[in-house]
Image (cartoon, rainbow, N blue to C red):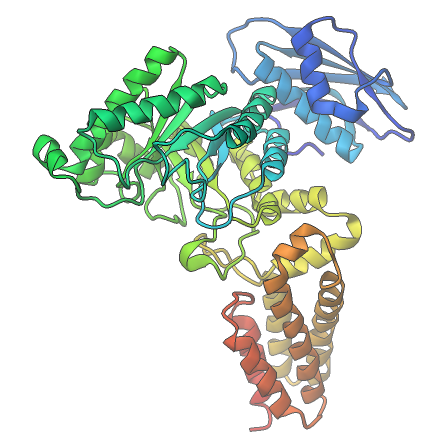
Length: 544
């Protein structure tokens, strides 16, 4: 019942409340009470779930916690022991997830995350999220155990194109809201700045502009920064830089050193992450090692793995990166992002292809998101589950948990049928699994002379798709608005399936079927795998 799975447990039973429940505490500690109110919000008032907390300095994982729950019927006491408020918040979020499902265990658990750095980055090309959406995502990811957010929207002009300019008051206020929200959730907020398109590295004026901008950001409460040098020319542009540094790697080493020294003057506990211009490959590329091998080992280094969008991330690759750079890679994982050449794909499947022991060889993992805010939630919940407990991670189980959390019961089967066709991505996951099973079964039945049973099998699937397509196109929730392009093609798929059954049953509608299939194939929106087209082609070939 616990999701993600926990490290140690001694669970003796389960509880389901049959009446309205409220969460409260008799603690007088201000930070304890603030955490409780932050996590439980509207259900925090004197009631029937009593939370007691013991927060004492101990030498254990900084986010570890012990949680014991005892009680009967509609009265529960939850005892939390931890060494930090970070650990306390993780325990509270575990309880909050149980509240949302109304499923409580009795007994005790001990839990902590495997990956130290677990988070997401708004680093895609496309329409940026609204402030309210960013606040919502911070809460959702904290709920499922993530502890880091990198702010790097490409369409925020003050992040990239106008990096020298200070934020106007209104924009600064919006950014401050995000910082305050992250701090309240014990989520590390990183502001990323990307000066590489126009910066003259040898210019004191440009350095001072970067420092001045950073001082403004620091005044907002930001204590973690990202220096992004990706997606820029690999050659130096200014004559002065060419004379002084010779190559971009040397210039970037200089800039990173100067910036890190400046940050440490602001505060000794500031953290810096840098994304090099060479950010993918085997981990031994000269441009990468000339840069990452010469900067402070305290600076984290982003790396996307073997490819920009990597199918797999392995311990062996991470070890090669460390050997050549003296840094453990902090993975900038380009999933579920679907910008650039992938804009016709929709990535809502679970994360796969990341080794179970990757946390032992890496600094952490940060997921790059899609511009489709609501569609991100499905895959990101699975990423959070993997990062918390990778050795117990099951992609399909995590995906079903995410669906159950995000969608009401009457929508779950429909969204699973639709998103069965969204497995096409850099992960190369098997697309259209459910459809493939139906069509494979029907093909075998046709080939063994059991046409009636084959038609019945296709009909069963066609009815599911027809029903789902009709219901989904009527839904008004934001997630379905984001999916409108794919829903349109999904509905066309349902029409093709129905018409194919008429052809199989003897109707003279082969030309109509061909016409609909032409429309389907002309649409660049990526949906079903080859199994659907193969099935339709076999139907069209029956009477040749």
